[in-house]
Image (cartoon, rainbow, N blue to C red; front, side, top):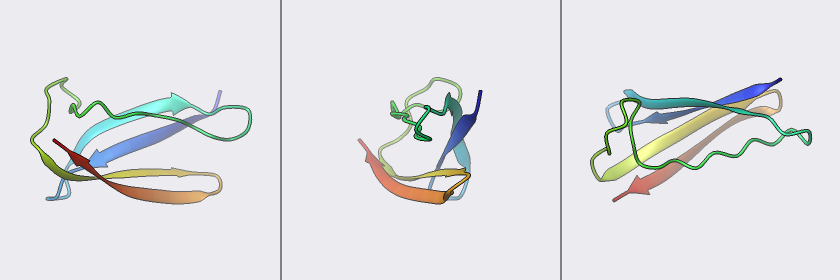
Length: 66
């Protein structure tokens, strides 16, 4: 099955969370970030970037975690 990887990046450019999710039959992929890093610890409040890319292109969103 196809997967899409989501990467959460902090303001310093460090990847703090990476997670792959399955791609649905319509080509979409949904993932909801819980504010935790790869180690399971809740990250500091602030702005983060969420990057993903797939067959149809790339997307980046800015999210605020409090």
